[in-house]
Length: 112
Length: 111
Image 1 (cartoon, rainbow over the protein chains, first blue to last red):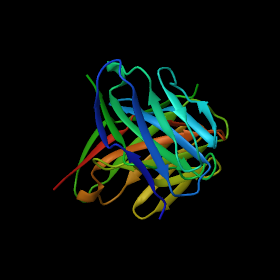
Image 2 (cartoon, each protein chain N blue to C red):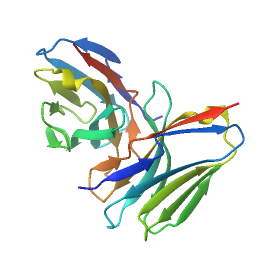
Image 3 (spheres, rainbow over the protein chains, first blue to last red):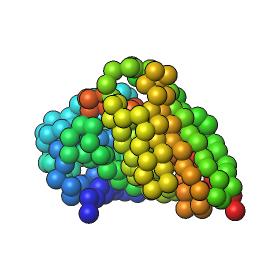
């Protein structure tokens, strides 16, 4: 069964600290995505990747970096966490753009 | 960029009744349309997807209608049961890597 696993599932970070959110997929999918979910805003795309060692900016990339060291792994990095980055983050994967997107269970990040 | 408006933000219906959610979009280009379901503490699960050449699609108690003239996408959930309580999202994609989501509708099924 297709699987997207995120870690950690929740995290509390201090303002100004570095945060890394990890995502691992066993779907053999080329496309991977990081979304942010805020109440009342649906999901907004932060970064995505369609091949290892390459990442692309989404709609709200400021304050975030992404890393795709392999087809299976895609990380989201907050170099200097800020209060406004408190949200739930979802990783997802798909075979191609516009095919079914499989989501992980999310990471709840609280920046204090 | 593309904007997707979804309403209502909250919806409460009695068990056995129907629930109706609407999304409107701005770009009239060829697109893929999706409905997702998110249960508490879980990721989004794809319910149905339709291409822009489809006006109506029915699957397992769900009906998706696409009105391209009015740029409106709707989801009708018939005979609701408690397991249908969740947040529902519409989403639109235009043949690129970006999918634009609506803000979500929290559906509550009352006994």
